[in-house]
Amino acid sequence: GSTTICTGSSVTLAATGGSTYSWNTGGITAAIPVSTAGTYVVTATNSCGSDTASQTIFVTLLPAVTLNNTGTTNLCSGDSLILWATGTGSYLWSTGSTNDSIIVTTGGSYSVTASNSCGSSNSSTTINSVSPPSTSIAASGSSTICAGDSISLTASGGISYSWNTGATTASISASAAGTYIVTATNSCG
Image 1 (spheres, rainbow, N blue to C red):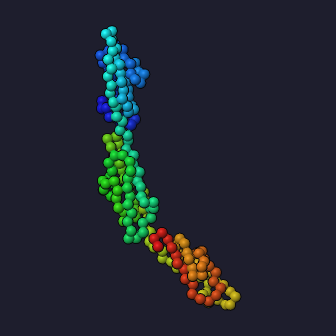
Image 2 (image 1 turned 90 degrees about the vertical axis):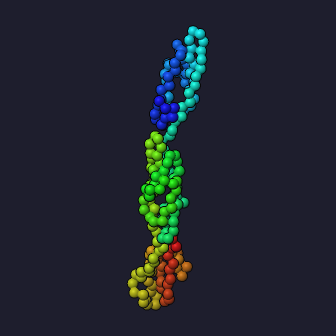
């Protein structure tokens, strides 16, 4: 068979010309099965002496692929993200590209398949479309309060918050008249 085999396969090496045989693997039969890469040497001996022959076997690994990104699976509106494949074999992306990398401008599921003569494997990831925060403030009651009373103001729409009072929580207690402003932030702004 072929001297290049796939991982998990084997090929038989058969020696001829002698009455006894000695392989560098320890085998003493005329034929041995081989499943790992390397150079195999056999010494054939008869009543007149011995001769040595060698054969190198190559093993092709099953393709392995890893899908990589720039460290985030969140894609802000108007931005782009590079996805790239590492591993062995030739690549085919779910987008139809056969390059080792693609540029993503929309959220969704992306996958890449690596193939070689021994088979194929794939890897996938989901990219989330993220918009800048749209924040709002909800009051726990009327925005008109009596002296000495307070009202709870709760912001929403972001991951972190910064109030003009210096508070950094989503909710604050307001006991003084005035305008309360909150800035909500997420990974996109």
